[in-house]
Length: 298
Image 1 (cartoon, rainbow, N blue to C red):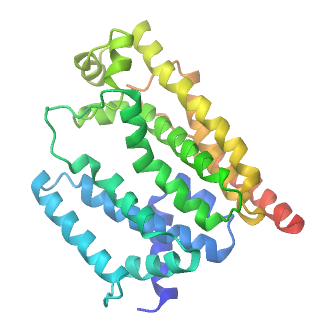
Image 2 (cartoon, rainbow, N blue to C red):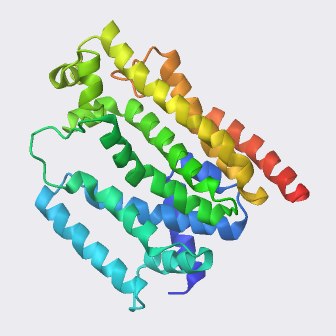
């Protein structure tokens, strides 16, 4: 399979599935947009294998192991007709993305497949949750800035913290769905701080009414996310000019989602909160204007 065809397949996957991310891809130069679609398609495949509840956890582990082995063989130069692997290999070489970052991407998507010592998947402390956020989101940010381009090494820590902001936003938005799947990403030390039990979170997911202490708990996680979004503001000027609009679109959509959650009073156990498509299109239009301006100035 030729590279252009492989990228076209990845672009279709991103267009169909990426939602928030695809809005940002559209304001990148074509070669960077193609690369982002390849990265997304790779992550999407890993996520789909990890979350496939039509098969058992053991079967998912086996399927994931086979897929990872096939990818590693392709990365090492083995023959492959998988368009995602073909596009990803080209992207990795073009933007000099280290093997370690891609391996950490896979590690992040497979964390939910690891054997659990209890019926509910939890994290003991916020530091433990931060490590989870690093693997499932910050690593994505570190790969993205390789594609976006940067020269100041400060960009790496800022990209890490921006990824944490995104993932904490996801955790708040998805707390109900995660609890229904036996996953509580609100760390145990914070639950104890606000006198909220795991059983109470599951009761809220089942329809119980939100009380003040639970709003305070969710608000604390929201406040931490807000602090990490400040890193995104500092990261923006460190990114190559032709990619700043894409980062701005991503941050504006995700931060907007967090602010919608905050304005709702953290009513995240009812209807899923999202940024309306019309608002995303408006942000995209602003991003496109920024992209033109940045390229003129660069």
